[in-house]
Length: 380
Ligand code: NAD
Image: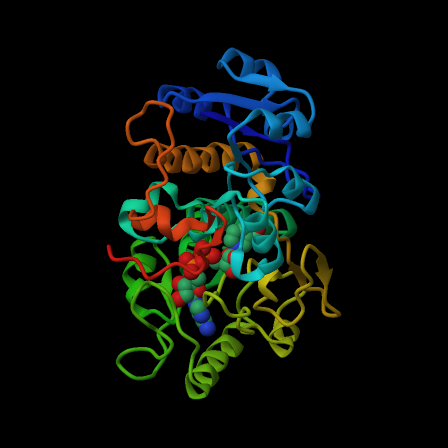
């Protein structure tokens, strides 16, 4: 099959879905690879590198969409891009089907098969294709780097001839993939790190990274925790306890990184205005949930705002794109693994097996039908 990546059109998007390295792997599966000229430039991959890896470089998006059977992308397609889709063609990209009903209808009408990378089930067998996790991991790391860039002090404590420097105190709220990456990065830079999550089972992981887990004085099983690795909304009583804990932390911590997410719901508001007011001037809040409405009252998506008392609140939604080379390498690998499963005989022929839990879970349109939402996965 012919597989190709166009240049991403979304403003500020620097990632690319095909790298020279992933192209070599795709060719071993029997596929021919194509790239739109310049598509990898912002991620550090020039057209020569693709040509050296045996990729055909095509001028212009339209030619690329026409040349290939499978289009691989980072962002969901724009209206214009959707027009290029044709019957029998496959698109593999982030898609967010629950928020993009009209787009889903259009892709169905074009007769295309769409594999949504954000719908890959979070089960062990699919970890290698779990692009949400690979991107959240980058976002968690980058959130700490961004915090450091805005914070006027060291992370680590120092005793120097010029004076004693205390370590920065970092609070991470939500210890899923992004939160754990942020905890690991902040502890490795020498900060004193505390973390909170409604799922108490993450306490051990947090503590093994050298951070302190903030336990709430509540029932044995902290409310809001649920099986399946995801959180459920908290009860009002639990929420009050949680907010009281954060109020106590606010005047003491220098950096707050919020990553709290409940799938399919707006981000819970956890760092309220009065907590920002209680923080020291020069403190930094990085709100990774900005795109879903933000965990902090003051967050503005894609903006850096400074509160009246001098606290910097960052709501960038493009952290993975700010590390475009690394993000592209990992994302292109996630896609390559998806295509490996879609090419079982390694003979360049795609077999779209709707009996396969992972392929079924991620497929949102197929053979003229909308196949979203999928049935719950059989395999854990
Ligand atoms: P995840 O599901 O792995 O982790 C979310 C964590 O939040 C879970 O551990 C959950 O238990 C916890 N949580 C839920 N409600 C909570 C509450 N009330 N208090 C404390 N913890 C709570 O998700 P993830 O993959 O780590 O992503 C985290 C966030 O980062 C998401 O909102 C995601 O969209 C965002 N993200 C942002 C960027 C960016 O560029 N800004 C990039 C990637 C991901």
